[in-house]
Image (cartoon, rainbow, N blue to C red; front, side, top):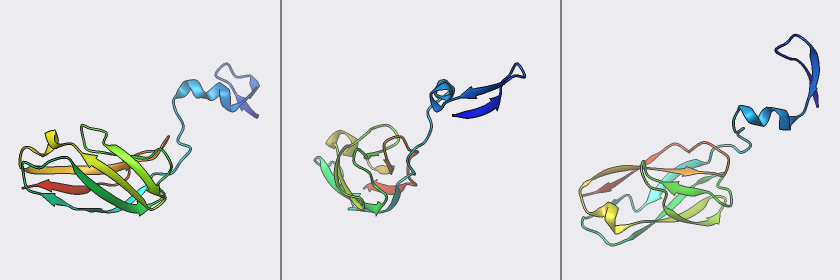
Length: 115
C-alpha cells in the first residue's frame, strides 16, 4: 500500500490493484535473442523449424514475425524452437523474428530470409 496525493488533492492510500486500470505493467524483462538457425531457406519451402538462442526465455515465450505468432516450443531459458509455416515461405524476402516473454516487451530482432 502506498500513500499518494490523489487528483483531488487529498492524501489517499492506494494498492497495486488500484493502478491496474491504467494499463498492463511489465513484470518480466524482455528476452535477449542472440541468433536463429537456420537464417535462410530456398522458396518454396515446407514448414521450417528454426532454433532461437539467447537469454532470459521464460516458459510461455513465443517467437513471432511482424504478422504471425509462430508455434513455439520452450526448450530452456536459452533456447526455443519455432515453426515457420510453409505459407510464409512461398516468396523471396526477409522477415524479422523476435521473442516475446509473457508480460514483457519483444526482444530485439534477427533476420530470416527466403531466397
